Image 1: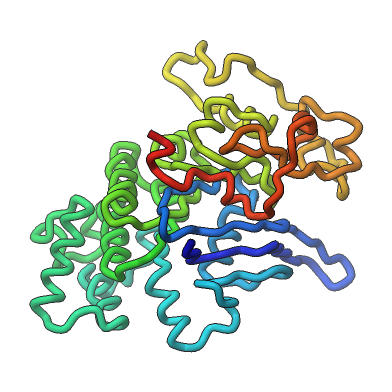
Image 2 (image 1 turned 60 degrees about the vertical axis):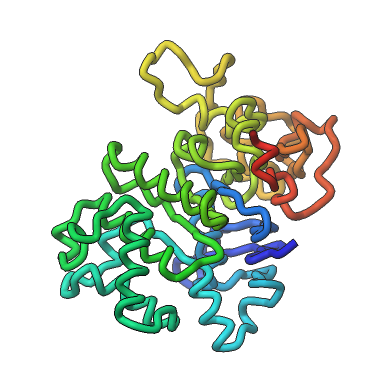
Length: 344
């Protein structure tokens, strides 16, 4: 099994405030996760703001260092990569950011973002080859080269700019794509097109994708697997279909029950749960969700729940399922659907 990226017991702590009044925020708490190249899938990292999604994104990209634990790229510690290995990582791991406009220099035409990676990574041997590669990449994401090239960023819509960034990622011949809220800043009418482009990359080109989102509906639409994060920890993980249809963790249930439907009288879940009012009590040793959980037990206030395996492709960190076996492996990816045929 070829693992492109591995997070091994990774913790990331941010500090803020003055020296004598420092505040610590645990953005990622002992996370072990890997991405398999041989069985590519689309995996969502989902949760509310502040759950740790983007922190994991930055750790995988090597843009920040873990406070504890290690990040590996193709079996080598990311902090010990040579100059050439680091260049290879930057080509093989392609990011797609939330704000497509921020990635453009307004003084350049959009062609610049397409030709630059081809030059930087020596992926083209001639101007004719460059033109051919760019045209094919644009067409793959549903853009017409004649209507796209030669324009400035402001002359394109938000959806066009985002699809252009997906085309840029394709040109780098990536082995993995990390998409951080790629449709949150585009119109709803364009989201389906951008999501379809990501699915095409995964299914037709065999590129594994980490899809970071707070939107459970889009995760359900395109993702094979999902990791529900809360306060930097894994609340629930496994097959998207299993978790969305039968969520076990009270936090996941609250997330799904909050999804709006055309018929407001028809909930997603057959049984609705009410969220407790948030208190200021922070249980450092207990479950992080305890002070919001409608099913909180005394045990939850003093113990941190491990992951319990409730299904072959589902695990949940909740004492409500303590009668189930504990997950043996630290790597939460073991809960994922590895082969697409398993999901058909």
